[in-house]
Image (tube, rainbow, N blue to C red):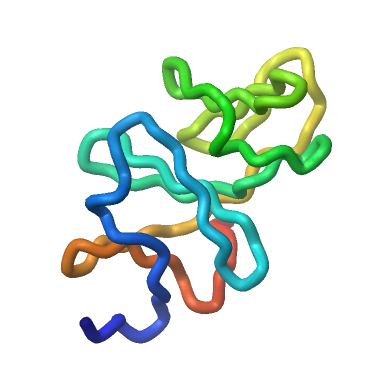
Length: 111
C-alpha cells in the first residue's frame, strides 16, 4: 500500500472494534484511536493529569474516563468534564485508506 503524502500509518481498521479504545505510539506520542460507527477518532492517548493510558479507561456515552483518577474527557472535542480543571485532550485528523487508519505526518493536533 502506498501511503498518501502527508499521512502516516497508524493501525489497520479491522483491529478497531466499535467502542473499544486502542493506543498507538506515533512520533513518540501516545495516540488513542477509537471507532464509533463509521468514524475513527484520534485523541491524545495519555491523561494530562498523571499521564495514565486512556485506552485502559472506560468509554461511556461519548466520554472516556481515566483509569487512575476518573477524570472524564468528551470524545467529540477532548474537553474535560466537571470536577477537574485539566486541559482538553489534543485531537488529530484521521483518514481511512485501503483498510488502514492514517494520521497526519507530521503528527500535528487539530486547532
